[in-house]
Each structure stands twice: as structure tokens, then as C-alpha cells.
Image 1 (cartoon, protein in one colour):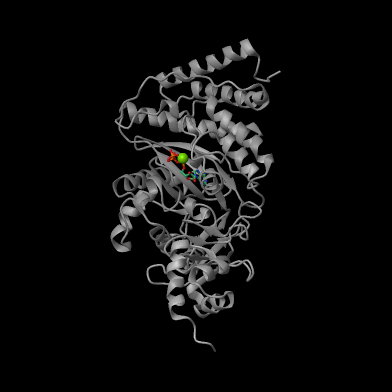
Image 2 (cartoon, helix red, strand yellow):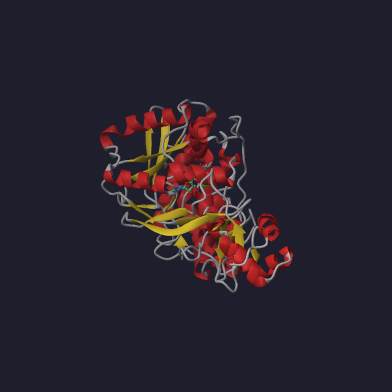
Length: 464
Ligand SMILES: Nc1ncnc2c1ncn2[C@@H]1O[C@H](COP(=O)(O)OP(=O)(O)OP(=O)(O)O)[C@@H](O)[C@H]1O
Ligand SMILES: [Mg+2]
């Protein structure tokens, strides 16, 4: 064998670190060696160099170790029956970036979607600890894992490190790393017992106390509102896993308003579920220990062990569009143009968006819309759908707010009208629900009257 060009060999690392990803021709030119020589140098490096694509079109990156471990990271999937399988390997690049064949995994991606990611591959962005529960987890593990108490400050390596060890119960159906996967298998062999109806109120009171005091209670589900996850027994439920949001336990105006809003969230889900046009999970309100609990069944779980993959609009937009914020409809249309999602989904997304607008939901960020990946891509059941216009301020003040009705452009009228009908049902239900305070019910009734007046004047409710 010919001795390899030593300086070219050490230059390879520098070139790859600077370029992140490069083909053989570029590298040969940069290092001043022939094409066969660069291929030989790369081959000699074995697993230290990651190769994307076939020999002719191959691109190369330098491998990064995760906390000293250079092995590629296995990505497991748990299917709807609860059976786990190895789906792909994720390779980390030096100094940053990753290789994960998201398209090959069956996840939404453009036809020519590259397996290269400048940062975290998008499926991991929904799995990373975030919001109320993410901060709780971070506070508990910060010292042992050597990570910040604020998960928003975590590097990609911190996120991956934590997920490979603690991430056996993520949003969706993916698990990365052998340790987390072994933990999942362990939970199948030794399942957690479900909370029975008899003990539910007491358990929820305790779980809320723990969640606020120590920031514990479950591991997945983002979002800023105080919440915990639980497993409960309920005959009519399709699975035992729930996300439970809860209000404070005192009688302050802010707490009373949050309680009203949790009841509204439940009513909005009910209206959507009964609409026949869109889906919403089963939910219920439990009032105990001075708190209002909103218990919502998880749509990414099936039966006791089954799971379904999910991808938020936030993660897809970030990967393929880059709007960051704005209308769900605009972002969805851009994803259609990029051929990430089929055009048939825009109708449902528009209906959900208009319903939100017409019930004064001012918090429809891209994290509040999700797609179900299996069996074929569709909009997930609704969540976080409530009149956030009326949310108290962070300091506890409950400001007076005026609801302004959003009107459609002519081409949007059919969908808007459907949403308008549902919104009337929502305001009607909220104005009658005795779990809501009188003052807020009066406000809901005012909004009902507003919609009814608009209907009388414009005749747009399609109610025939
Ligand atoms: N029924 C559900 N099944 C599965 N996942 C869910 C469900 N409801 C919510 N989630 C997930 O949990 C996250 C947090 O839920 P949600 O948005 O309701 O909380 P939040 O604290 O009100 O959020 P935000 O920070 O947007 O105010 C969602 O972004 C979604 O990924
Ligand atoms: Mg949310």
C-alpha cells in the first residue's frame, strides 16, 4: 500500500470541521491531492468519517463523539401495538450537525430531503424537554447530567445526552439510545399501575402539589402551563395516558380566571369532537382541593403500550420553511409548496385556525398545531385551544380585553362559516357552564351575542 500523504491527512480534519459537509472533489482540491488519494485517506479513517450518499455523489463529515462515545445513536420506534424496532441510526458531526435519514424513517420531508441537519434533526426538537415539565426535569437532573437548569440553554449534545438516558416516554413514538429504550422495555414488563376513579381526585391533588413544589410528575409534553402526566383507568378511554393541566388552589382573580379558561379548553375540545369535521381528544374537568384540573387523553398513545409519531408545525416549519410565527394556514401552504405535507391537509388546518380565531385564541403559535405521522400524515386532534385573549397577566392582573371578530376573505368564507358555527356552539356552552364564574360567563354570553348579531347581519353561519 502507498504511504498516505501525512499533511493531507491532518488537513482533512480541519477542512471537514470548517465545511461540515463536503464531497470528495472539493476535499481533494482543498488538500491538493488527487481524487483517488482523498478517497483512500477517507477510507483509512474508517468510522471517524461519516459518509452520506453513494460513492459517486457521496458527501463526508467528521464524526463527533457524544460525551466521549463515538458510536452512532440508535433511533427506535414504538408502533401502535407497543412493539419497538430499530428505525435508523443518527450520526453526529464535528463540530456540529447531524445525519439522520428522516425521509427513510417515513417522516414528512421533501422528495429530495437531505439526511443532513445543521443542528438537531427535526424529530428531536419535539422530543426535547421543554416548557413547564422540561424545566422541572432539568432542575432535577442538572447536577448529575452536567446540564443547565434551563433546558432552553442546552446544547444539542445536552439534549441528545439527556434523551438517550431519560427519554423513554417522549412526545410521539421515538426513543433514542439503548438506555432509554431498555427503560421503555422495562415499563412494558413492569407497567405502572393506573390511578383508579376512586383515588383520582386525591392523587391529582398530590401530583399537582409535587409538580408545583418539586417540578416533577411525568416526563414528556411541552407547554408553559402547569401540568403533569398520569396514567389513569377510565372505561370509555382509548388509552390510560393523560396530560393534566391545573389551576392554582387559592381564590385570587387570576386563579379563578385560569380555572375558567381550563373549563373553556374542555368545552372547546368537546365542541370540536362533536363537530364531525375535526378531531379532539376526550377530556374532562375535575375540581378538587380548590383546584380545577383539565384532564386530556393523549393522542400519541394507543392502548397500554402503543404509540403514534407526531411532528409539530413548529418543527416542520423550522426544518423546511422558516416562518417562525404567523398564520397556521400560511405555514401549511408553504409546507405544501415544499411538498412536505399533502395539500389535502390545508382545509382541516384552516378550519382549526378559524375556530381558534373566533373563540379568541390569541396563542396559536406553531407549537400548538401537530401532525400525526401514522398510518398516513394527518392533522392531530386539537389541543391548547381556548380563549387566551382573557388570560391573566404574569403578575396576576386580569385585564379587560375586547374581542375583535376576524372576518374572512371571500375565498375563505366556506371554511370560516363552518368555524363560525362551531364558535357559536362554544360561546353558548361557555355562557351556560356553571363551573365558570358568573362574570366570565357573562363575557362569553356577550361574545355569543356578538357572533349572533354578525350572523343576523351577514348570514354567514351556514346554518340554513
Ligand atoms: N392530548 C394530547 N396528546 C398528546 N400530546 C399532547 C396533547 N395535548 C398536548 N400535547 C403536547 O403537549 C404540549 C403541551 O400541551 P399544551 O400546548 O396544551 O400546553 P400549554 O402549557 O398550554 O402550552 P403553551 O406553552 O403553548 O401555552 C403540546 O405542545 C403537545 O406537544
Ligand atoms: Mg401549547
